[in-house]
Length: 458
Image (tube, rainbow, N blue to C red; front, top):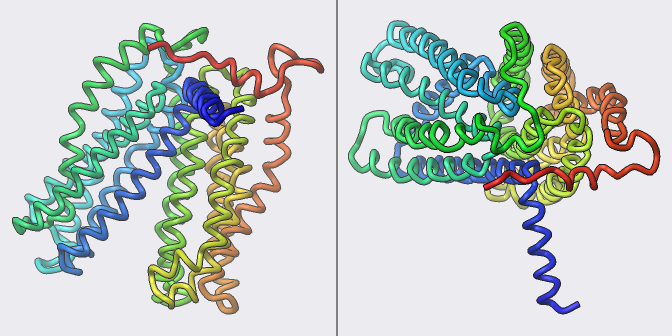
């Protein structure tokens, strides 16, 4: 075969793959993860160049405070949207409005309480003291950030995740430009302002895109194919789903927030610094798996009888993309850490390698979590997060006297491995279910079924 023929065949294969909603959504969300990580890195590099260390430190603390409040007050409505919006039909707008309203109101209450505390509990001049004016801006920014994140989930649930990558790409560029502008004009709290102002500006065009173009198509059934919408879940189902999912999110947030503190307490301040680059890379890689499985939740919700077939296809993509990337990062860890300096190469290499190895058992855990979401069994997710937190946070003090900061990597790997061993039988049974069209031997394979996923009509 000629080179031209090979290229043409490859292009046809790519077009066929991208015509599949499952893969298109998954690749778009993976691209979004790369875009977010890249612009996030550039943003803080630029911030370190144009602002003083104190200003960067305060800005970083306020940005992370805003995001933490948003996560804890959004009540995990984002996951509920991904799970239920694909089949909500004409109840879709009501589901989205409810998520926006509840998350915004609770976010405003939470942010107001935190800002009041920061204003009254800290004296002027303290890094965490805020004025009334900035406190009001912080509250508005937190509410906007909550809706901004929910819009990403809405776009995912509408099988339009490519808009998520585009939206966050625009946000990253505007954020960088505004960072330089506020530094040039000496704007007070310029780091936080440059981070939050573009979010508010982007809410309007994204809202119009969803409400005027994507949502009418979804409600009219133009992207439902042969799937019959079942409507939004009843209140009891939604509350139960949110309660279990939110509890798991609290355990996960508490562990990730407390982990650097625990390292400082039982090891040293420098150990917390050595953990930072490894943890940053690991979180980025974890988000790639989350991106792929979010697309799986959307398609599995639409066709639950084929969810295990979609899971097989997703597992193959994880094995072809995420796991090799994790292995490459593990092998190249000393080279990657060289950019931080020789002391990081010496102290951070093994913990980064262990975290990358933990991505392998993490695949089983992630598929089990997806299976649980599709079955609306979210309290199991809370238990899973609690067990993982206990193993990690309990293992670090035991291992730290001998292993130092490497104890974090070993404890994390142990937590993922234990959960994977427990969950593997359930995941394997799920993946090995026969195709619905051919329950007996000789039926079409999972690959054949996933190729039959209908395309979204333009």
